[in-house]
View 1 (cartoon, rainbow, N blue to C red):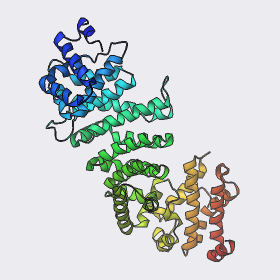
View 2 (tube, rainbow, N blue to C red; view 1 turned 180 degrees about the horizontal axis):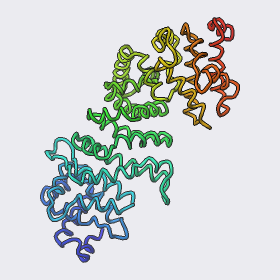
View 3 (cartoon, one colour; view 1 turned 180 degrees about the vertical axis):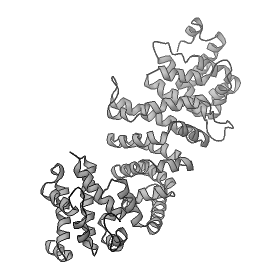
View 4 (cartoon, helix red, strand yellow; view 1 turned 90 degrees about the vertical axis):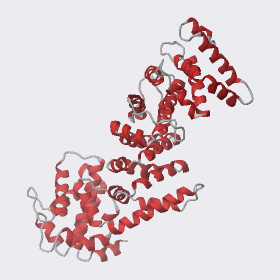
Length: 463
């Protein structure tokens, strides 16, 4: 490294260049280089820190020297996070501004990797170093840089001139940066309030699952886990698709470290009512049961599995299955969740859904089902989710007709646009929407249940 040329360029003073030469030689020397370098820093750390920051210019055509200085700073902070004080106490130059300007300009992967990490460590060196976190605009600017480069669409369609592998590596670096300052309570709250990081990271987790990069999945999960320690953020996370995407990742990825961090995050979310409902509705108990049969090298995985399972089992006993069903029907989007296929549910709740002597118009859930059926059939075409909803609606109407003493009569007597529900089902049976076989099958089965008195006998004969 030709430090002298930067004296000629006016970047460094002669004393600064001399100190960097000595520090550079010490860093490269064999033996206890770390100890000797720390002795130099203890003697004149301010000069070395100032000189290294002054070297971080954005107008050099070759980023090699800049990258080299960042490596020196990175090593200095890794050996002793307390060395962050030398940079924080600078008054002649702002280390945060120099780093952030460099990151906004520089595209070189090494500069981005070491620059974001260095900036994050200066913002929050960690516990035990008697330095409060930096919570001014520098924190927000760094978080914004990370958020922009963690855009989920970049995994679907990388920007021009970029490769998917490059995008993945950059995202791993950005997550590494977040993992440093999200450990601090005040930092994670301020940043998440400003940028809703939990939403960005949840979407990214889902896209990263398609890509299948284990390290990226692990680090995204780690960042979400850190965010989940804040009660307000945890509550906000349960209102989004974080839980669903975590469960998807755990189902598709077998790597222990990924499972471990997802479970740790879910453990922080399992105490909330919405979080518990979401996990139950998405078959988390079944998934957890499978995972509990695996052998784990980390005992904490077993503890988290047991804790989450116990919490969900208590919720299942408290949470009414009819409440779950009502919320799902009201959402207008039905899936093949366990509540639909449970004979016990229909036998116990069918007269709650529609009391004796009631009608489609007087029963909230039944009216919502019939309304879904007719409204979806009016559409010229339907997407995959809507076709699944139609299949489940047909199944549920068949179960209603099967278990309700007046179910067949109710569904034959209600009228929507001149058609009864039975008429609509018969049309779907013969002319299925979008030629979908499953909808046709479910409509046919529902008609059979309306017409056959002893369905159980017929079901037994056909099996």
